[in-house]
Each structure stands twice: as C-alpha cells, then as structure tokens.
Amino acid sequence: GENVEQHPSTLSVQEGDSAVIKCTYSDSASNYFPWYKQELGKRPQLIIDIRSNVGEKKDQRIAVTLNKTAKHFSLHITETQPEDSAVYFCAPQISSGSARQLTFGSGTQLTVLP
Amino acid sequence: DVKVTQSSRYLVKRTGEKVFLECVQDMDHENMFWYRQDPGLGLRLIYFSYDVKMKEKGDIPEGYSVSREKKERFSLILESASTNQTSMYLCASSPTGWQGSPGANVLTFGAGSRLTVL
Figure 1: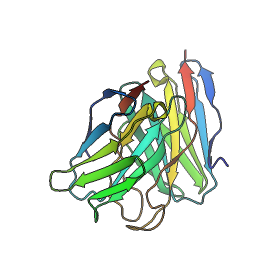
Figure 2: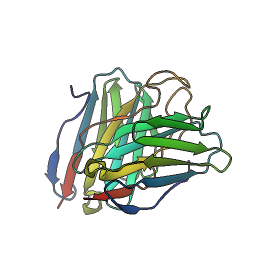
Figure 3: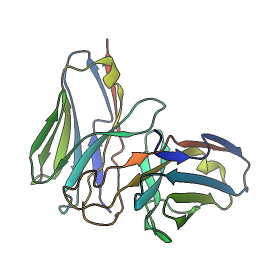
C-alpha cells in the first residue's frame, strides 16, 4: 500500500499566524489528495481536496498545494483562529472505480494559541 | 442528518468475548471501511469492502473479521476480544466515482465506537 508521512506531528501557532502541514506519499499513481480535520471528540471531516490536474486550490483561509514531481502536498491555513485547533490528516489515493486500500497520514495536532 | 451510524458509542467487554460493531450508511455508497484510531498512530485501516459480500484486508486485519451482507451495513467482528484491541473504532463510507465526479472518494465517517476490553 501507499507509504504516507505527515509532518509535523504537532504544531502550535499564535492566533492570526499561518500554519503549514506537509504530506509525503510514495505511489506516483496517486491522483486525489484530501485533507481531513478531526476536532476533539468528533468524527473526521473533509475540509479540502485537490485532484492531480491542478496545482493549488483555495477555500477562504485554507489552501492545498500539490507537487506531483516531488510526491508531496501541503495544507495551508492562514489567519488561524482557535476553532482551527484540531488534528489534521492527509489521505493520498488513486481515484478510479472501486475502493482501494486507503492509508491516512499519522495526523498533525494543531493548537492555535489565543 | 446523520448519514453513517455506528450502533454503539461506548462498549466495555471482557477478554475472550465476541464483539460486534455495526455500521449503517444511508447514502447508497458502494465502499465501506473500518479504521482503528489510537493516540499517536492515526487512523489505521482494518478492513474495507467495495461491494456486498466483498471484503479486503487493510493494514491491521489480525484478530478481526467483517461482514457485508447488505450494501448499507458493514459489521466488524472481534471473535475473541483482547486487551490490545481497546481502541476507538471508526466506520466510514464513500461513493465509487471516477476522477472528478462529485463526491468521488470523499469519506463520510461515523461518530466512532470506543471499545474497552478488560
């Protein structure tokens, strides 16, 4: 299966600063790159995703950038707020037909300090 | 509007007991997954299913089995629970879709089942 590494494992930022989380994957056939957010005690939920025909996607304060050559993609959060505090997971995969083994990164605990 | 429902939020079982964790989705998704979540280890895939009666092993299938007799229901079975299976179990589902189709590959998770094995 896919070998997925996510860095850093923990990240603390001051409110209003930016945060960047990086996900490195091994399978060059991967073509779908989502980020999930899990708030304390809640289920993971998709916050942003990108497909391999684009290099960057933005949604208000969050963005995802993709470097297929280097096999990594990153989550960018600008103007962080306390409600951004959560664990973030990446899950690169091949998007084609039926489900394949889907491997998540080990997660990044983001803490936004007021 | 809960779309993936896990039957039990909290369970306490004894070593050696048989445990059933049930998951039901109402979105007509083809794919269903069982993950285990432990601190520092992220989400680890136990089993997944891409169709009724079809199943495939994930990264950590040992000690677990699954059943998918109906499209909407995916059950995780611990034949003989052990203390090292104490964990949070998350079920998820996703639609089969081709590159770019709306919602393709997006996982919807259940609220989780926290299992304690004594």
